[in-house]
Length: 272
Length: 303
Image (cartoon, rainbow over all chains, first blue to last red; front, side):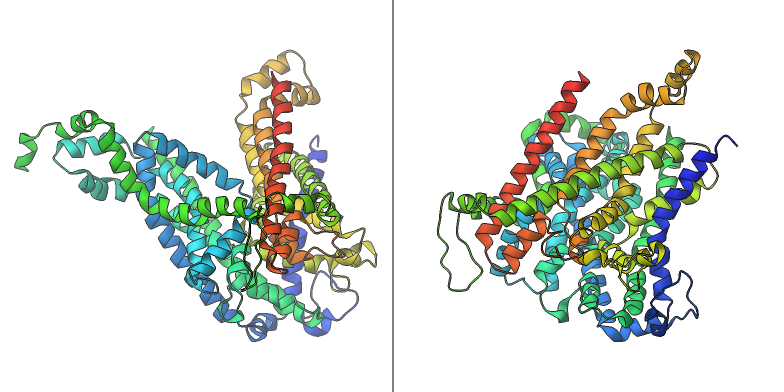
């Protein structure tokens, strides 16, 4: 009974954190007629899934989703491919370059995007990459790289150096020992980094807004925002439904990551 | 595996003896694939962008860019709209950071105790993190919607929150706090769990109550974590673009036009690349100045 104030506070937090989510879900389940009602209620009168199907008709959601998928898949694969060798170098060697690279990782976390986005747009224009998905992939790879590098080098560090030295003793070349010893042990780290890069790209808005001008090449976040245009109450239902669907990949990601984090911690405990 | 016997322990020694230059060469080769895009698409543009601030670059096809020295900065100093935007940006960033910190500290303290529903609260606390920023913005538009929104219904008000000159900024600040709470809470919770239990036990022996323990043990122990996360939050909030762009596009009448939105419009709506770059440089200088002052004060107080 002593803990009543704590429970009251916890309840207040849970209400504050949950109410926008519940409202989004509630809006997604309402009929257009009910949306026009002046006194909206928490629980829809006649819950319907029609908004979810209507959403596909409103805008090119399927196309936008596919484009987002292409961009997110290519940039996550490229990010990992490019940062894997570099993360090995960062974890295993010393030198000026290492300090500079780690410094850059830090700076990139507090980056003033506006300073970079104008010149970046000009560079992309020179390269004829404006309005192309490839241009956006390049930008996403560049800006996911620092954090991916940071994640991966942590995983490389956790592979005991002794394993590689033992392989070298057995006559394995450096490349050989990387391929047959380090790489398999890195698999969980690679998966985590892939997922992280995928979600960063899937969710990203500002760069996409600047790079993609044509509705035909727009990714999902841009298409969702186009939904809102002139305020029509009847379109809010499909908008809410589409927003919920756009969140699914991120939720899957977090579910996987949470399990991985737990198993990662356990692996560490066993090894001591 | 006959080779094994003939070459014992050669490789490790070779690496040590092979000298720095060899190691360095290997490192460069491995770093190269990452280095090229970073140099080409972020370090390069960053320097280019700083340079642009001193030119009259525009988006037009026939425009010839020329160096104008500090002229842009002169114009900017007299640009009242810009300084109004900086003021709004600072109100936004400071209030979101402070409220986020207080709210997250409270939540982290609760989550650190043995309470029922703690698991559920933890999941809820992380959800905003897992959502695309665009969806967060759209969701809050639904929440604030004058007719179909829940805020007016709940409080019996009749306010168009996001279009009201007085209410738009507070409304987006609430959203900002909501969306940034996960990171802050997770970091503070980790900080709380890192405080040695013995300190509290010693405090109890000395007869300290909960408040006393909070002020004399928890807060001082948490200080480095607090300084770090509030600094990061501040910078992230200043850099915020997507949430506010989706929610209000800077309206009504520029009341929520954060500096980032202002510079974005200047560059991509009106095409004044050079002037927008000047804004970018100025924003960075203002932010670094404030951050430097904050960190300097914290360091002085700590020592």
